Length: 330
Length: 265
Image (cartoon, rainbow over all chains, first blue to last red; front, top):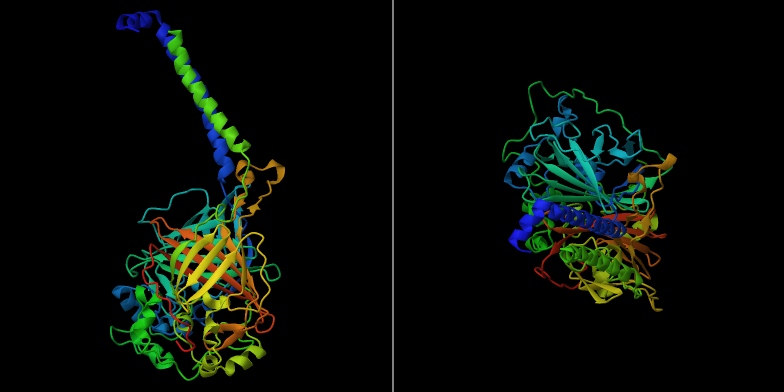
């Protein structure tokens, strides 16, 4: 078609009509292909995968019996396997258990991270949109020392970095296949081990809930730009219980004055923590290992302490035994 | 003009026809028998290193005699554990009692997982220089005495979980396609009696081990493998022992260090 013919066609409107027809035909074809594509992708990949995680999940604290059950028995200066940097370690060593005796700190350290290190089971339920029953949020109940964790599933964004950090932080969730991945931000300062080992209020938490029949595995990843050199992972398990329903909330954390003078925050100054060699004196574990660091979590680290580890002749304390580690109802 | 018009339209029609033809062929072709490797919803092959951030002094070093914290043991178990003697284990050639299937996934170690054939996963473990073999499909265990690593039958636990529609018809979200479970499930029996803890806490040869392998892929590309183990022992455990272990994916064999079993370290 020459330029004159094009001009003529434009004048006559014929080209416009043909172009419109082509566009319409193309649109029909594209629609067909698109529908086919969508149909095929729907067959291959679930659009909105989800499983039911509601119910009472009793804690099975075998993976970390030292931390999940007796708690502080793991040792007041035990940061084994924790990827602390110098700032995190220094803050951890400044902590004194006596802070729990302060009315304003008795309940202070139980951020959402406590879900990975506490002793308790989980009560999980969903909150639904009343018009159509769609899940708006999954909720994990609270205990006496932690708040309710509400996990928004409706796609809402996390608040501004400058927003308030509430006790429960702010959590959103999404299904990745059969795994519920929960992202928690806006946490207050909390603990990563029940001996005062801290995380900062800049820490974020990724929690994965993976259900295997009546067993649920929880994986927690903590990222803390202030205190950790790399992500810190924790895992634990729960078992679905139909005979011992767990309450949605427990007794509230009750503040009490246990005699710490007003205006005093119990602490240890740098170099003055009297428990620095506790693990070495009790369990023969070299103190440099007890101070943690990312390398202490990996098998190669064993070579560094092989000739310095001196196992006690027998278990010194809190040794367990028949009947000493019963199943928790909650 | 009409020829040109037909050409453009024809291109689109041809495209649509080709798409339909391709789709039809996909459904029409005979489906070959699919192997475990073909149908794997996750890829756990490669090198992995354990990351021990919990129960460190019970796992990274040999705990002292009598430290039974965290094990719901029976009286019979305690009697045996109280008599633990490393020298006797060495004399009996039982140095590998703590490197058996029941607990080996919780050790400080590296794994090398491969597919020797399309229906078999092989896991080499540098701690104690052990090998586990996971058989898929219709594999039948040969008759034989119990072994440290037992007989393992594996399956991709990829059953579809159907979510019932909501009452009154429901909505699209609730009648979404079924979720696929995406983990490896392994059941191991024919286990030789071994140790739950290096300080002599036993499990019996009547134990059965069930494991679940999950894969996590982080936004930065790092992969983590989470292993959940359930050990049931009617003789020495009051309750099933449910444990977890975590492994970080390695790009290569860095740090791979096969070492013999040790009853002491």
